[in-house]
Image 1 (cartoon, rainbow, N blue to C red):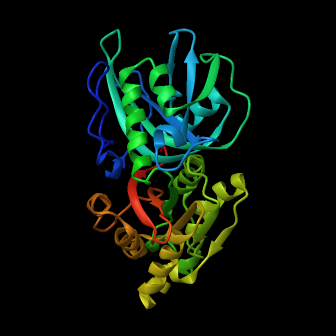
Image 2: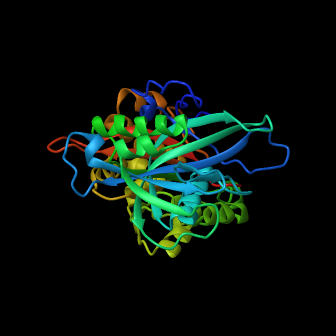
Image 3: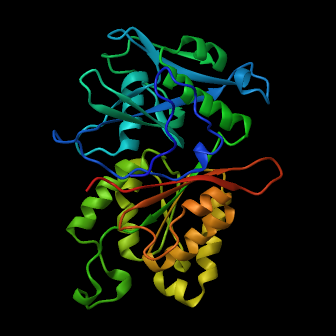
Length: 350
């Protein structure tokens, strides 16, 4: 499992985070079992523009959300342990909702924090930057207070040194103007019936039972980035893959023939153009297609990416496993073309 660059352990110096956000965060789904030696957890650093912030200085223009846990009498960022059958991004989003009442959209991965528990077991906490989409009521329990603070005030309030290192990472990306991003999700369709076992048109080949379960699990995973605009190959196995998420989110599935296997074979440039439009689109987007088409779509992400992103991208067939998601984090400065500044890969729990 490859994760973002870790933060310094408690009491140590903050990490050099110049490239931490531009590395692949390939966090595969892990179900928690009693035999797992490492305790896994996930959390967020939720941020917003300060109401009276002045552009250019993140110390004054950015606010972050802190929570207070009475059990430990500490101030920290929302986080918690992974539940059985849950992926790390899903854990981060769930914990944010439970502790703060906020429904969030994950942004770029932040450094993973590693430390040792009092009983000697190692613990790893994966973090993401995040933005609130809507509010609600937190669940009563571990947290008794939440507060938005400026970066400077948060740095003084945080209890643990490794949380301060996370804050430094967030500020570094804000200073580079690469903190505010939008997700472009590339999805390979879920497991379909084998070609040799299907006698009808290939466009009508459906998902098998395992593929339908993957699509249901994928719906929960996609909620972590909440894509508003869905684009798909018109072939059944792709639209069936996105259907559970579309039903739960209310997003409409649009289709383009250039994303089908036949369309790509006739003119590979069409798939690349469709992907480029989504990279440029000013909203969270998702594209579902087939293994042979992924070369053109991933190539588009590479052309829009930094050197670190190009090094991190899959570069050979099959590119992604069935139902796996490539998350490209896109930023755009005024007057410039969009840039993919980070990528990560996730698969729904199987």
